[in-house]
Image (cartoon, rainbow, N blue to C red; front, side, top):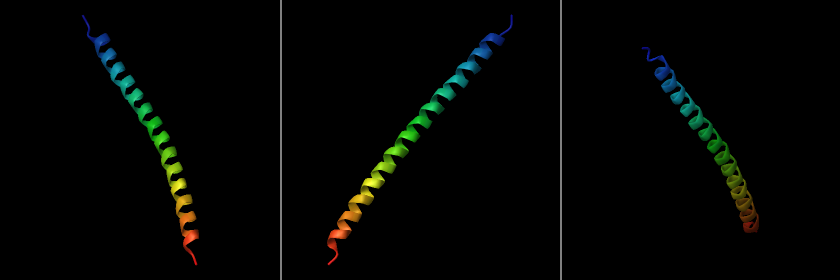
Length: 56
């Protein structure tokens, strides 16, 4: 009796789990980069508005 089906199944599960976790991490990274860019843009607008009002 061969153990090949069990070996292939374990490698298949490990590979699919790695793909699922990688895709999830890539999606979270993309979402967080967009969120960071919007926060930095808002911060830049707030600082430029504050600096403009302080000039005499």
